[in-house]
Length: 390
Ligand SMILES: *Cc1c(COP(=O)(O)O)cnc(C)c1O
Image (cartoon, rainbow, N blue to C red):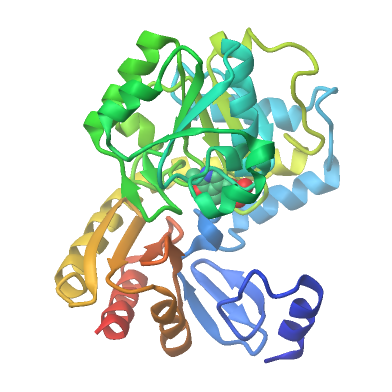
């Protein structure tokens, strides 16, 4: 243990366990460097927040330029950086989602989306999918599967109906006229990297339309090229009423958004929601630079190509190992389901190979590398995985 790790534990407590025994001081591209200068290959992209990798020069320049001109501008004033960013973001979003609420984190985006849906429909209930993750604050927690995580707060957060993944009959039953919204991830992330079946998604869209239920797609993890297309819901042919965005949207800067239709927007009235930091100038500058690079370098296509070849390599080298149950994913969002808990293997990857990966549900190793990752880094990762899981 170093002094820095001890200091951090002393002040934060140890309830959020750490995966390394040294502290990080620097990052560049897909690599992190610790206090001793040791390099780690990061296949987590900071929980998926770094589509361009660590400290991408164009994002760094945009933030520092903006900080010198105007570093804040609240939502009761017009702001140049915000107006320019909104225009850029809107042209990247599906056409029907022309309205945007900017905030600071994924959970906040889902909070806002749930409130907007309830206000727009004047209905009280929410339907979500088992295995889902939508955040940890109380509104988003209401939609997050994890009975143990929700239980202590049930009195406060009320009752959400959860349907089993891909169970169309359960969905048919759950979506009655008391339901404001169905919220789902097209590929469940924290729940274990489970893409929902396309027939389930189609049915969800149809039932929502028929019954006046709004469809909220949570693209906090899957958005901005992660799954090999701009948005996973777009690739699945969905036309959601609300789409929540976070993680990679700001290239590492805290930024999130709720894109929604004008029909939803028209039902909102002054004072119904708000944010102090949301849409601040630094976040807009970071988001804008991130989007420029994503578009210029076609990182969604890059993610699709590299993701396909990574999946093929994993299928050849890792899938046959007896520990491995299934490998699944889209683009550069991949889950390796084990027959045992993933923790020990993640620790070995880190300690023996200096490769960082994430868990997703107890038995899944999740890979979310920066979208700028190259083939040789991914080859090295597959070598390390094959050795550790041997
Ligand atoms: C991470 C995540 C969230 C929560 O985002 P925070 O920024 O941690 O609040 C919500 N939904 C999905 C799908 C996520 O992956």
